[in-house]
Image (cartoon, rainbow, N blue to C red; front, side, top):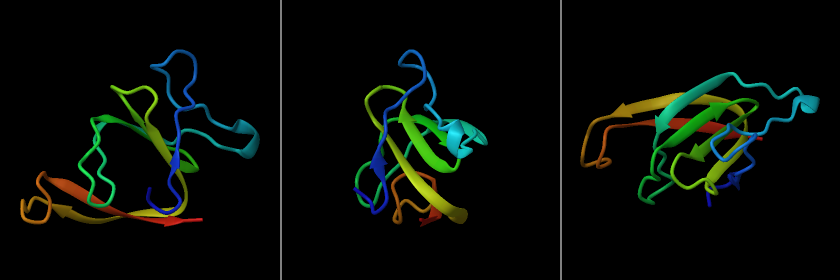
Length: 100
């Protein structure tokens, strides 16, 4: 597991719901991006899921309802766009996540 990354599968309502947020701490949904595959380190990409940005980055799998990840962050920035198959087998973006 990547530093700061936690298993997350706490969904609202039925298993197709989004992440359960913590409004008492001021957490609110800022962005929802469907059809996002993630690759952590040198591991193969996960099947597509949905990326949620709140005060955390949360990714929930669309196919395995028990699979998801969350990380608290201070900032996120786009580092690079890659279409080079020698760098990674699929077109992708690289992000830098400054964790708390």
